[in-house]
Image (cartoon, rainbow, N blue to C red; front, side):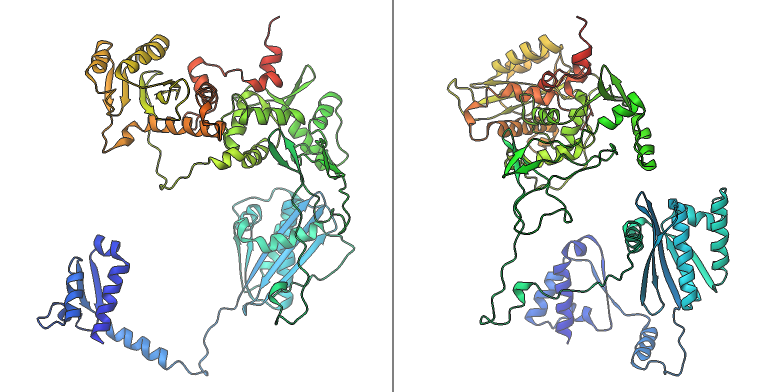
Length: 618
């Protein structure tokens, strides 16, 4: 028995070794474990365990409150008689929610009795009601249901902040309809012995919300009960023996048809469950969409005939906004008309083209159809493309002056379909850390310098990259060389840094032989340049250079694929793409921080924006 208790302590120490090493441990026991481990008469096994536990700060204490533990054990072994009444919780729980949409209004009720029985009801309101009125109707219907069943104590849960605060007296009910609803709720609440109304988040009220949504979208003439049953096993698991009749295999859905977008594949949206053709019918029907609501446009759709894709982009989302601005045309539906008025206030028309106003951004050209394809492909993988991720690419497109409502989701889908991005995605195995501040008071004051290589040797012999990064603007200067010596570094600094951006105050680099040579140190001291070296023990001191090297190599891999020998020709396009891509650290592009304006990229040549089409004076 004693050895088992000792083994339990040893196993706990092995399993929880970091905690045993970091904190003093107290072992509460009613057995003499301390005398067993520290006594003079120890067996071989106990002596081994005692030595193993000696590295920890363990204190053995006798268990206190023995009387309370004995009483608890006594009550557990001899429970109370059945004749003694034990007070049970008789509180009922009511979850209510209301839903109002253009299809109609509905309410959902979920009542849980004190015996954990659940009653669910769904009602459709046959009169127009706002969201707040639907919430009140749901609460009233739930209270009437609880009264009819015989509940006395009830807690009602609602996700409407207005209803809960008006009932509590924190909000004032000014509208006459709200006052009537509030008085009706208080009147019904007074019929319960105990009543409490609690506000909960929408995520905790999903059952009632689902019932309300079901009622608001269902046919009011159709009254039905939907049974919810379970399937215990799949069709392949229901076969009891190999002699039974074989079950025909399930017919899996076919792959989504695709259309070619240069060398990318764009998936074509399939019809929904209610729009699919019967089995065996290979004809794909066109999906007709309602273009009246431009704020929530559907992704572009395509029509397939005879297994060939046609370039059909669906309805132009700009047309309703243009018609309203030009002619004041509104949809017949009041809800859609109200949304169109609100949305159109953010747009303007200049020489027949629709532009979106921004708070701090210039006017954004609204594009649609093939222009979306041109801009997306050019920004992602064109001459100035950096194979950015979805949100980064959408932010870059917006900085260039373009807009369409689904640009974020389209860019995310495009980046996910990019084969090169998937093949050369970064594999991060280190745990995430907080970002450290790396900055400089003014541009080109502090540079980080590093060497990348050796890379694939070309016919001209170059295989190394000398890379310098400005701490303030994140601007990168890089050049390829056959071999990098201290004389090459001095020439690079003279031609590419001092002549272009002035004399820097400090250069941060590692302890490479090119950077710690006497000639290079004399050159820097002659120009008043401070040299700071990162130690081999802490290479993160030159982290800015390492981050720039990683970005350049990643973009080169995505551009070259198997053509390794072309990295020299792709170096300048990679630098151009990096300089015109917004950086997360600054929120701006390095080009705009250096020159004060965004660069003109090839996407603006194919789809001219406001700057390209209106700025020329001639």
